[in-house]
Length: 443
Image (cartoon, rainbow, N blue to C red; front, top):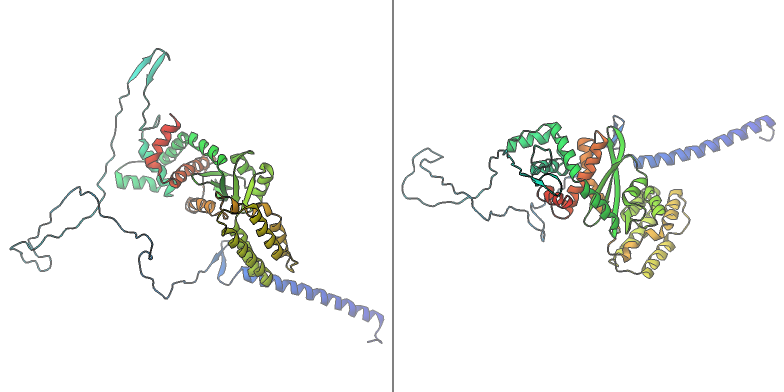
């Protein structure tokens, strides 16, 4: 080779450099492809530009005994406390062979069943007395609590429509059919929309009271999910405390939405899933934050899946830390929190080959003040499960109806969802307890 011309040697060296560069590129492509295969297993595909999965059968070979587990409350229908009607069923002909049966009665077998009677709507004429008030200088009349002003449908029926639409997630097409088939009540699809609008308007003061109350609670869980308003991307936000579920639909996913709902001076602890909007919210309000540990552990599980030993080490440390933190049962002290964090930091604070593992640990250790508030505060949960459960009805509704067709419809939906889910949270329902709220709100 030493006898080769200088130009040939230079050409060979340039080729070696290209080979070395291509080998590095190939190594990176192979590494990226290996990660891609992990994220896209063979049971996935694409349809209309969207990914989907082929789910394998998960039927267990061991058949479980039907019914509730030992120690669980059984699900059965109790016998009615009162019998409203007794019907006698005589027998004169054998149902099997057709021969007459006669002679002494052998026995009488009892059987009890429950049924819904055939219902028909009632039309009520209200005679409202009006008298002249010398103090107000005008004719006055007593309010009618059974029907909203200007409405031709009773309040109970309107609340049933709201219950069908918001709680049972029925469509505007299905609600009139159910009312007609069960009760003989004629209602158009347009009237369903009108009823939702009327009821939302009268529940306005109650919704404002919920906003005021959610600002004063000692702790609240916050979450959001995607939504659509007339085809445009938007978000359904939920704010949850022990007795309140507050919903709001907005076009934005930024910190401005929770800042608008909660205000700059709201009280209590904000519990969330570590989304960046909540970090910005904290910088604006200076409120105490609690990161949801299930999201932290889920992120660590992803690191363990894609980055091997380093990710598994992070996952093990975080699981152990959360287990130790939960053991205090909200009775811990500041010293206990300091010990938990120092031990976690000592185990995690090392150099990682993976850039993502390294960045994850660095960012996590920066959030010391947001990790362990639940250790000492009995009102704060270490997870954001409450908000995730509260947002689930909205997710199901979005899959059924796709969102709202107008901004007014979105505003009404958020308001009515707040009323219905708050009542449910307190063991009530809008049909039976909605009138009480309206009487309280409007005096």
